[in-house]
Image 1 (cartoon, rainbow, N blue to C red):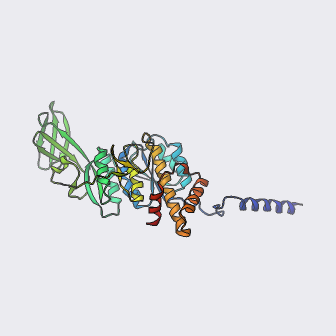
Image 2 (spheres, one colour):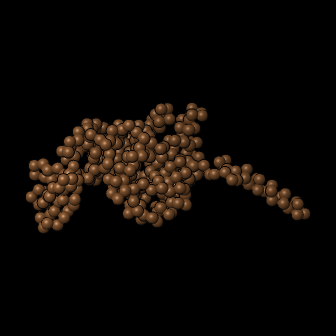
Image 3 (cartoon, helix red, strand yellow):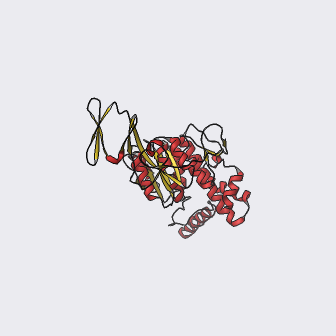
Length: 336
């Protein structure tokens, strides 16, 4: 009787396993990742945009979350993706330790950061395996940074610029440094000699990264001897604003430009008021694109590949209803 009972249990478990999801894995095997690397930033555009080329270079995605808590929808995405590693870009003030600890439940977590966005950008740039020309920009000016990233051959290097009225500040020059005081003789800061430039009617302080370059995209930075680059304006492409910085990553995958402002023709639409939701939508777009291309290489039927890709990702709790890439751009992507 006991042997019969054990046999029934074995048969029941076998049937249950056979009827489970076709992607079920054997006991002891590691659950496969939909994508190896997920980058996490806060909802501000600065760290997100500085991570775009790095994310693209490692075939990853970027998800934004509130800085002090892990957004539940982002958490669901990370859980579903099951990445091999999670990279937080930004310091503990940008993405809190609580968020980091929550993410540790879903993969190996590393953090890339500096005390300022200039330092964080520098560390990301030094990880890039690219021949792109580094271009100094005001890292606090969204339009200026995006203008550089429109051109795939350029990578922005964040700098901080302070414009001071020479009538209101006192400059004391030493051999290698400059101390600047306000009109009340209070110390405002001490800088290297090459970080301070006096031009008619203003004193420019340039806090720049330790990056070798000859180029910039800012007239005040150009006063330090850097050459201004030429920027191309595009009429049609993926729309981007401060609430949708991950659009840049999608533009890299699709090989189409981003467009800023009125008078342009967007090829898709986003909820421009919520950067976290927008990052999820863009992540879904990239996951569907990748999975469709993988399947297309096997059957060369685009419609079937797209439907199957959505079905497979839906079964893993990816919100594929957010997918919004026009068909023609999907076609170009899978065939490139």
